[in-house]
Length: 107
Image (cartoon, rainbow, N blue to C red; front, side):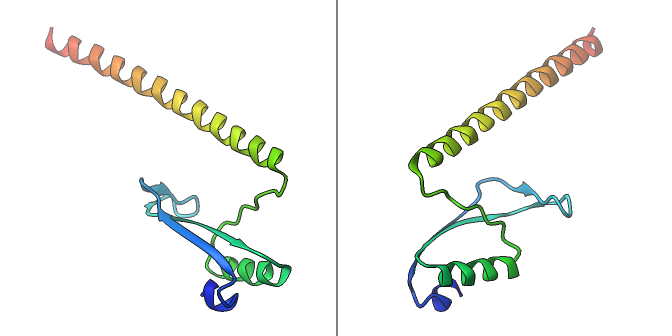
């Protein structure tokens, strides 16, 4: 639909997310598809945003300034690192607790 509306004046790429993601509205685990659209012009932007809105897609603009792009990338990577650390600590705590419980049940 995007290709037809912009008469082919865009670059589009999509990929399926590796893991299921929890939908914040329904709290169900669902498969998500991530896509990126590169285009030129305000008319194309308006059409693309309307189509994305109609399909319920979340839009994230990319700044034109390379330093801002680098800053956003670093912030995202930092946040992902923090989340991975938090998850690792939680998993270690869970494993230690289960090991302790298992040891007490055996003895």
